[in-house]
Amino acid sequence: MLARIHSVVKDNRGSIVVEAAFIFSFLSIITVASLEYGFWLAAKSQVERVNYSLASLVRERTQFYGKRESFSNNDIQQLYELAKSLTYHRYDKELCLRVEAIGFTPAVKKTISYQQKLDYGSTLCNSITTPPLKNSIEFSPFSSRQRWLPLYQVTLILPTPKGTLHRILKSVDLLPEYVSAYTILLAR
Image (cartoon, rainbow, N blue to C red):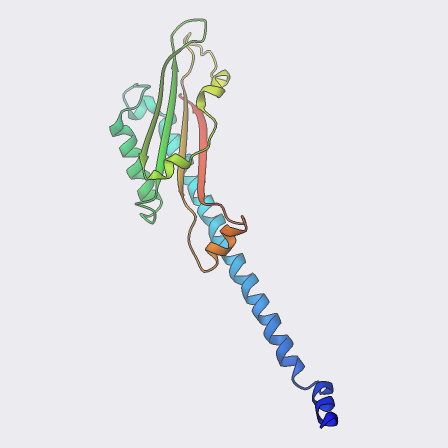
């Protein structure tokens, strides 16, 4: 009996199958995790492109909004609808848009005349951690028209795409909770 057990333990015929099962399982997990991360990178790229498009519209305020430097709720809603369209309506319920604006008085000394912060969309707006626009007022130049140019900040945020290993990758901090992009810009 002892000889039979010894021969089974020494037999190498099934070891390749067991090793292959472990290796293929490990490779499958790595492949799926790589795909999840790739989906996150694609979403990040899309958010940055859409945010840049929205920021370009905000920059050209004189052409689109009749030389108004401040925003109305209707302006933000139109930008939000454009963002939904540019993301192909994949994130309609989760998309969040924040637009901030700072304007200055027409004087030699830079003093703030108005400050706006308008959110539109989901509750993800509460997760936005961008630095306040007020910290960037030194970037506003004095123009040739003898005025300080207004500053704008456009922030777009949406949740991370969910996939097979989404929960596991988030639990070990390999995937963030949401995808966001923000841009600080000057009016033209």
